[in-house]
Image (cartoon, rainbow, N blue to C red):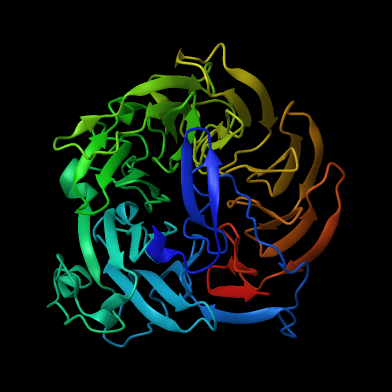
Length: 498
């Protein structure tokens, strides 16, 4: 990993796990491995003015379909978008796009574009860009496209040639009913592709979403498997929900065997996280069935055959919810199954995770659960340390800072609860709806709402709103902090604030 240490490095110590990581860059969504939505950055702006340009370093157009969050590594900013404002006349029409921008001024280094699946719009929703925040390690960029392809990209694009082994970028980036273009800068350089629809039978719904977890030579990711356009039938109930790939080749090396398919109410959208418990590496995964799982991480040596992930424990966040015929509760706001959309956060031998009804089709009730991660087996009845209930759905990942947990909900609130007890200290209406998570940094919380409202709040037991402004477009993702700069992506623009 030393080849990507462009800035100061620190040694992150977890029991039994020492990891060199970048202190200034933000090469993946959420804190490294544990996924806590807290940044170590300092010097971030408390206020800014989009009209006068105060504390605005630069802005860049994203078209009109950017639903994810940016990541930052080696002087480059990576963010998903669509192609509603083509940057290259050779690429026309609706595409999923990943932009690689210069960290200094937002200019384009390269872009990866991929056409729509076509046919049923629920397989690949028109106008929505690539939603998955990329993960960067060394000179490799890993993400999932709108076509449910796991791709590995060269950090430098085609500037240093088409290095392979994959060399058919022109075909990959062109609709099948059109002749392939000739790949050239500023096109991306694809190293390998793993098509989850072809290889493991994933049936995507709306738009795939993940943040790939890199552990040694492995990539851990949720698959996005979901229902079909009827919303009452799972497209392929036999497809896995969690898989592991060899990061060097894209080969499948492991998958879950939990048979979650029949219990998927909407889709599998929760990325995994990592922690060390009792000197054992565990992979934590929020299932589409409302159950949080812990699996043993794979051994360092990559196996030659596909393995089954070994479950260590399961915790049902909603044990009283229906477990059969779950789609009979579609469009029922009062009762129905639960799912997990946000990432489980590992913190002090505990897991903090949100679970509850689906934002679009499910019940409104949801919870923030604090779970003892040291137990084994079915720990539903024994491992709950505390539970905090929301009156509305949430898809957020927790931010744990100053002994407090900050979490958002679909009604537009930010909740502040005690990390030890779950006691509520305050609740603040930050906008009409919040789909992203709150970002903690420098004893502050940064949060954007879908109405465009953006708030900076003190990370304290007493509510203190330090600053509020309004962006001209919807904010659906989570802010990112890197190298003293705060990044906020709206549907149409990326803002670098310093």
